[in-house]
Length: 27
Image (cartoon, rainbow, N blue to C red; front, side, top):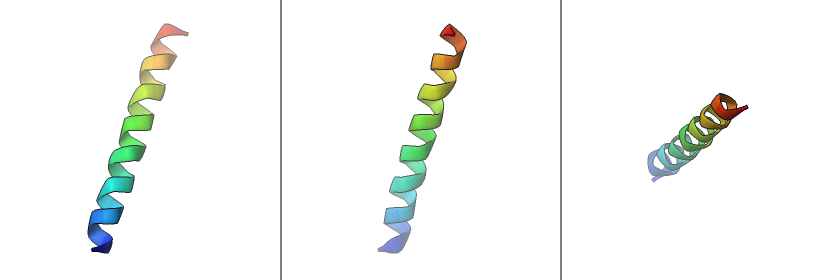
């Protein structure tokens, strides 16, 4: 069950990192 939690957190971090990368392109 912890594996699912870690996977969810990793996906969230990847999503945030991806959004940050997109924002940097516009700046």
